[in-house]
Amino acid sequence: MGNLMSLYLTDYDLDEVVEHCGRKFSRSEVFSLYKRFRELDKGHKGFIASEELLSIPELSLNPLAKRIAHLFENVNFKEFVVLLATFSGNRCTQEEKLGFMFHVHDTDSDGFISKDDLEHMVRTLCGGHLTEDEVTATVKQVLAEACPEKPVENREIDFPTFCKLFGDTDQQVSLHVNVPSLG
Image (cartoon, rainbow, N blue to C red; front, side):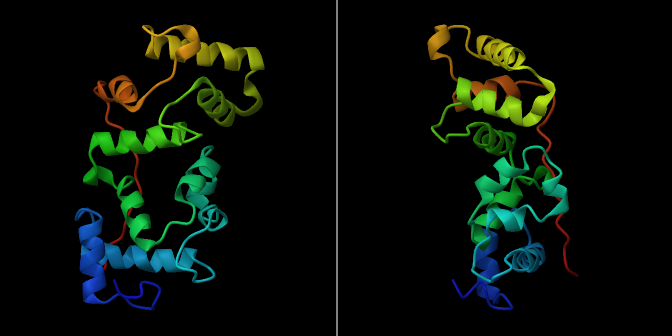
């Protein structure tokens, strides 16, 4: 691929990124995303650091902002486009969106959502509004409902279980970022 950190993308670069993201964005959308990527990459390093991501007002207001920034940390432009496809309307499947949500909740990146992962997420989402006993009770209840067949000490949620829990509902997972198209 050509030098993606140059001022402009070549036709070859645009086509390569369109293919890399599974044709989820058009060439003009990829170019718009490239311009936004360059704005975020303050030092023109070729990747985006977490503090640069947290400078996005829409993201910084999200209670999961630091966790999401950690997932996006040090992504290059091609990875940035693929990750943004998850947030772009109907461009991704329900399973791809669930995969992203699973990774957000799997805070230690071991492939399972454990008691510790859930406690971290509940604290992050609820702040100081729950006591430690309430956090513990909430996590126990979630794991009991998600994995009733497993012994209490071994309860953790794998991706297929996560998909079953969230994918069997009539509601679609809604993750959305508007991507402007040029021309």
